[in-house]
Length: 297
Image (cartoon, rainbow, N blue to C red; front, side):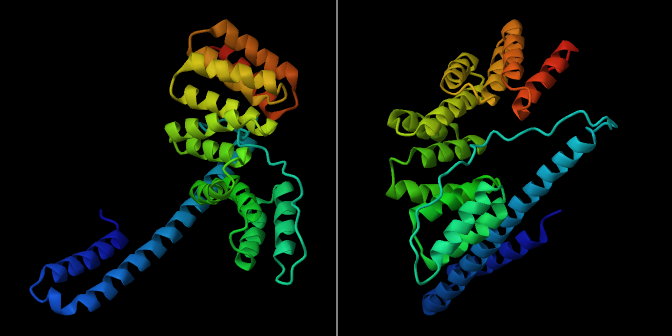
């Protein structure tokens, strides 16, 4: 059944198309311009509102997954033994922003946004940082923080716009670049992800960015079933940052899907041993138990 809203928009479009094709079109050019512009603006607004709603629904999905994991998996399994899948998004650890007191109050909202972001209140951070940008537009520091807040809420389109604005002014900002690479990975834009992540490695001006760039390149190649390339980047990730336990988990998967069962099991054991209390260490233990029972990771 056709969507009623889409039908309404299509009918308005059809009416304007008929007017443009009519014999009297030349006499009402100004009116047509106004009506077409109005349709375009209204449609843009509805698309924006629907996009925001889509992102909110995604949050409902994640909350449902977390609740399901807490109370047990589907198919009648109420054992409660499965932990929620942890995120592999970059961990925010930005330094407190350097802000100066101003008469319009933007600095207060920047500091508030940073504080909430550091505490994991991503939605509250977004509200504060948007207010800061209203008071002081086009500030790269605020845009970068807002990009983090949006990305960590999985509002990827809006986050991508923020980070792209930052990179236009600060092309050497390696952290913004790996965040763009991560977002492109999540959206399945693998070529662009590789471009940004590789450039972050070439820049070499931020250890955290270099670490995550290797890890996300591994994920890109894993998604593309290029398992040996994925293994190379995951190994390098572990060498650069042994504490990034998710690299052990993903390296194990790269081995497993490449038919290297023994190497996969050994890697997951190493990941669990490296930090058994880390969520990804626990995931390594879970996948070990699964494959030992004949399941798939």
